[in-house]
Length: 550
Ligand code: GLC
Ligand code: CA
Image (cartoon, rainbow, N blue to C red; front, side, top):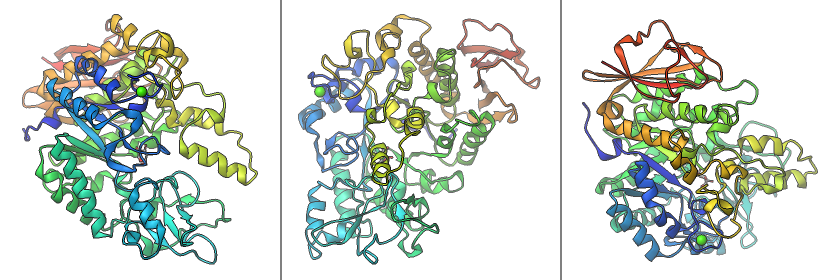
C-alpha cells in the first residue's frame, strides 16, 4: 500500500464565507459565523475546512481581489476572530486551509497603487505594463471575465494586464521581488499555524507574450479569452517549483491547486508524489460537461474523463474529487434532477464521485442538495463576469436577451445564495435581509429539517462519509472502471489486498439494467439510496449502491 498521509484520508468542506453564516446580523456571513458552525461540520464528519478568501478586499470578485494579504476583510471580522477560528478548529480535531490568490491582487493593493503611479516607480515592474498599439490595446487577448485583458491608466497612458476583472491586475511573476514577497507572505500564514492552501488560478501565472495575438478577427470591442496564451504555459513549473521549495516543503500542510488547463498527461508534474508541486489539484476537464443543454448529461464521457485521471495518477500522484464549488451551478439542477429525483440524483452523484480514489471536497449546501436559484432578471446576478458581459453588450447596443436564460442555468451565482440552516426567515442565515438571495425552497431544504429526517440528503452524506472512513479500501484501494460503454450506469471497483468494493450509480432518470458480467451474489450491500433493493439486476432512476465482496 502506498504511504499513508492525513490529507489522503481527509474529507474536506468548502466554506464560501460571505454566504455561510452571519453572526452579527449585518446580512453578511463572517468568521464568527463559521465558528458557530464548527460543531455542525465536525458532526458531519469533516476533517479539513477550506475557507474562500477572507483577506482585506474591496470585493469586486467577492474577496478574490485582495488588497492586503495579511489582514482580514472588515465585513468578516478581525485577526483575533480568525485566530480563534483556527484554534477552535484545531481543538475540535479538524484542520483549516485558506485560499491563496497570487496570480493577481486588487487594484487597491498598495503594490498596485505604487506601480501605476509612474514608469520609474520601484514597483512598476511588479505588474504587467505595456504600451498601446496605434492607440489600441497592446494585443487582442480577451479576459476570462469578458472584454480585453488590458486596461489603460491615466497616470502613464500605458496598459496593465488583468486576466480576470480590471480590478484584479496580474502580478508579474517574472519579477523576483514579487515572488519573494509572495513566499514571505505564504510562510507567514504557515507559521501562524494554518494547515494549507487552496491555490487560486495558479495555472495562469506564466504568460506567453512571444506568441503574440490570437488568430481571430476582432472588431475592437469583442475579445476572446486567450487561454492558449496564459494557461499552463511552458516555463510555469520553474516558478511553481520555486514556490514549493521556498514554502510548502517546509511545513506539514496540504495544498490543492486550482488547475484549469492541466491534463492527465501532464498531471504528474503537478501532483506526482516524487516531484509534483501540489498534493492535489482541481482539474477542469469534467466541468465542460456542465453545459449539457443540448445533449443532456453524457455518462460515457464523464466516465472516460474521470477514469483517465484515476488511472494516470494510480501509485504516482493524488486526485482531488469534487462536483460543486463556488464557481459552478448546483449539481442537482444540472447533472441531476431537482424536481422528480431531487434526493436520488443528489445522492447518486455524491456516492459516485466521493468513493473514487482521492480527497473529496464538499461545497457548502451540496450536502443538503441545495438547488439553483430561480433568477428572474439579469440584474439579479452579482457575478462580476456577468455584469461585464451585460455592460459590454449595452455599450455596443446589442440585445441582452437570452442572457437570463443561459445564466440562470449555468451561472456560478446559483451556488452563492445563502446557506439554508432552518425554516425561519432568511433561512436562519441572518436576522436581517442577506447580501444575496435566499432560495425560496429553504423551508424544505435546510439543515434543521434534514437532520430530523433519516432519509434526507444530509443524513445520506453522513452515512457516506462514515462509510468512507470505515475501510482503507476507500482511501487507498485501486480504482477500476467496469462496463465503460454502459450509457446510464457508472460502476467501478476499488481493491486493496483482499478487500473489494463495487460502487454503481445510475446517473439518469430512467431504469437501467446492470451488466450481466457483474455477479452480485458474492457481494453484501453496504449503502444504497433507495429504502431497499427492489430488483437486484436493475438500478432504478438515480439509484446508487455500494457493495463489498464477501
Ligand atoms: C478562481 C476562483 C474564482 C475567481 C477567480 C479569480 O477561478 O475560484 O472564484 O473569480 O479565480 O480569482
Ligand atoms: Ca456579518
